[in-house]
Length: 98
Length: 364
Image (cartoon, rainbow over the protein chains, first blue to last red):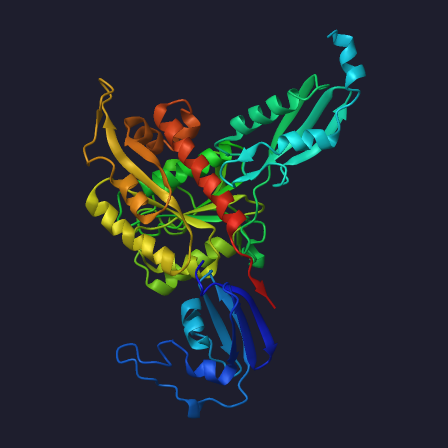
């Protein structure tokens, strides 16, 4: 069993998400920090990998507006600042949760 | 022992005795006994006559006759049983994560893909879909090959589907509901679409079509790993994908790319179909392995995925495709039709296995 397979995804509060993984581990994510790790091309330069959106651009009280499954391999978030194009694969989320 | 004494010695056989003996019948795909799997329904016992339904996970089960025969023989061996009446039924289980409300009636979505074009992917997709329908399943076919739609020819369509309001009504042929992305544009016009348009068109075919209740929706993909593939893998939780390849090394190597793409998006691989495996001479019926032999089964073995079967280069498959009647329907007893039917049954069995094993994801 792939350890980065989620068993349960739960919004603990408007600003915090929990993922329980197949191996029993639980990871917690705060919205502003997760938003700062957005892998999409408008947040992170595709060629250089340099971050375009920096923590100073993200309000501390940022919230999850929507959490959606992408097929069966990733999650997509809509944030309270309106951004919604980042696709976070389960591998990436697991890595961020370590 | 006299016949009339039989009932006196064993007055009645009980439900428990019947179920106990039926526990010895295993579903070889799900690796559990048919009682624990909940396959036995409507068990009735009336003075020596036992009747029940055997409710399988697909009407296209490749081993249904074997399981029925085993069940009948075991129940008949019980003292006090004179007749056994088994009704074969099937209920295709829903893929655990298929929860998009617009497609709530669709239990499983299967993709048929290939690395390169011209390997007969559409022929295989059409015949798998038609064979599943012929077995009694409710089946839809979405031709997603926007760049070279051949599926409409194979089912005898050249007109676009009708729509009511903003919903498309699927066309029907060979027992299937059918929508082609290619028929949404004029047939002699080349389709020059940018990614976002392909994305939108596929979403419309999936979500804005009245598919109704379906056990299987087969999606015939364009060759390669493009926009349509990614959209499909992102828009819906696929039950699995079937990869079609030719036996040639080059065909197989390119198929690996498609396979890896499905693995990266966590779409289960239901298996590899090798098409054009050998040529059957229409004059002398001899077989020639003109593209080499065994490439598909070797690749499947190396990758640890099921090998679903070898389909020959057979004139009859081509002629049936060209007149719009899939061979599994028009000539069900032809050798190639039998092969294609057995591939469809293996696909259905793999779907049942994946739905049985797939972990449930809770979202709160």
